[in-house]
Amino acid sequence: MSKQTMMQARGLSEDAYRAEAAAIGKRINFNRRLLQLLCRTGMVSQLFEMAGLAQACRSWQELETFAQGEGNDPLRLLGETLYARQMMEEEWQTPKGIIATHIRAVRPLDFERWGDRNHATGQLRRCWLRESALPIDVALQEVEAVTGRLIEPDHVCQFIIDHPAGLADVYEYQVLSRLEARCREQFGFVPRWGFISDCSRFAARAVVEEEVPF
Image (cartoon, rainbow, N blue to C red; front, side):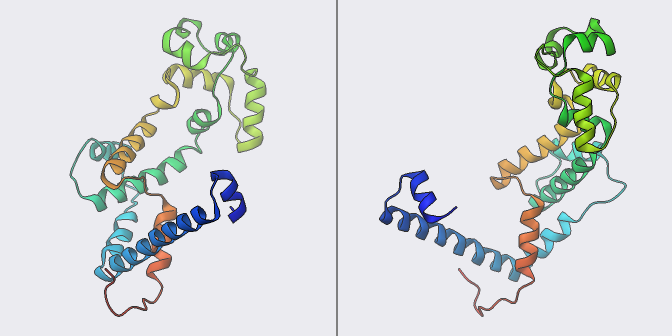
């Protein structure tokens, strides 16, 4: 965002813009120095170690056990959350994940044809069934164009029956959400892989200062 665009968007005068820019600069400088301190004390190395815990034997059930409150080690929480996000990215590529992320509603007529009208009640009806939704065959053609995966209408309807509350009913998403909620409580934000990459690039640089920056 350019200086003029920011000033117009926020209604800032020249002096107010300079004051805000100075405050942002101080925060950036503080964050860089804090990261230098973490690099020197070895904390960043531990961060990378915990963030790289991905192992083929780990499961969503193990992550759920941890998400429910097993231990309070912040580095382990970081590693488990990043690993869960990595697993979730893979989950989104499965038929279930594709349906969960690309189908928002179906017409009642399509659900009755490809699913089971006896399930078209309560929460399922409120969350999924819309007269204004695209015909299911058209919606799935669009999904195939985006993902390259062919999903059958009956698979969509079975997913809806199994997950009447939508995405909130997807087990893997529930586990990830619990981990992210714990991160917000502990760190004030949810770490992303981009954050780890930034730390990695910074840690790879030579630290110029001879004194630990406080």
